[in-house]
Amino acid sequence: MQNLPTKSSAKGNVFTVADFYEAGRASLSLTLVAGGENMSRTIDEPIVNRPGLALTGFYEHFAWQRLQIFGNAEMAYLESLDDATRHERVKALLGRKAFCFIFTCGRKPGEKEIAFAVKAGAVILSTPMTTSAFMHHCAFVLEKLGAPTTSIYGTMVEVCGLGVLFEGDPGLGKSETALGLVKRGCALVADDLTCIRKDVGNNVLFGSASAATAGFMELRGIGIMHIPSVFGVSAVRGEKHLELIITFKRLDDVKGEIDRIGQTRRTKTILGVDVPNIVIPVSAGRDLVNLVETAAMQQKLILSGYDPVDALSEHLRKRADKIQIDSDKTTKKRKVRR
Image (cartoon, rainbow, N blue to C red; front, side):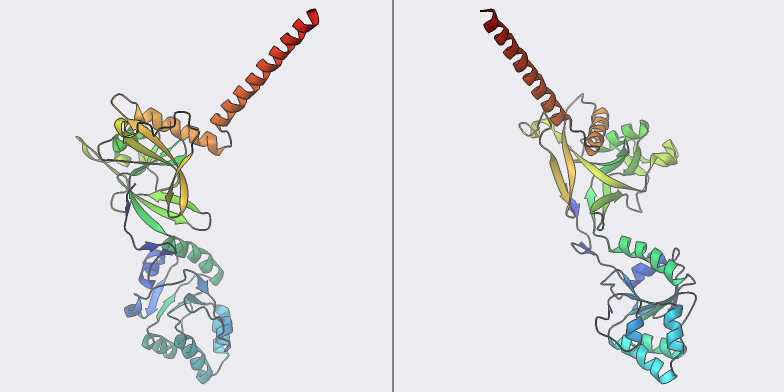
């Protein structure tokens, strides 16, 4: 599996105020009030902060790395102060490196406060949303922007409800297998290049296509296909939980590597998350579509708590015990007859 270099790190994706503004402008109804030239500032902590205590003059543990939210409560307090004190408190926040202020409920700061912020290199945004609603929806935008991400060469398909990623050398049939699965009612997530996002809170991965190639597939000899146009909109998925990685390898490359029983559970680690991994040998005549579909069904069975290897071992143990018991009974009867 080849991961492409990205700006993501172990702590998460690095993004700016401009990235946040573009990502949340529609869903959060954001408007730029001032400081457009300062939008390149990095958001180090993707979370919001209500600076109530800081406005009263208590600055210990002030979370300046976060987005500062000013709702009706903060504005009411500032409006209760005289002009000199209010200006002093705003300057104090700016002096402690606060760089982005978001005013909810359609509120906006005064001209003096705006001038102070622009001079200090800060950004001022406004939204008509209530403070509680804004903070709720903003958390999702920030979480998605800040999540660790990477890009992987591979094709991802939803098979039997599972997100399955195919990886392997070019020419082994990843796209052809995906096409066969789509014709069986599965759904394409991404072809050739899959973007992976980590949900840090739940420690799981999600895969999606890049914005440029979503819904498209390349097939040797046919060219570029637009899957929704050919098979309908239900044949694609925007994002899917990654639960299985299938590695295609040439048969000659896996001699002695395949566990024919399936007792050994292989995994691959992406962004610190272990994902179940199955190696499928590729050779002439093998029905990869059927094998991948079966592998996905098998993985669903394992995830439900049923392990066929353990079940077979238990079945054989009970059978051996029964044979031993029957043998002991037969031996005992013979001794009694004698």
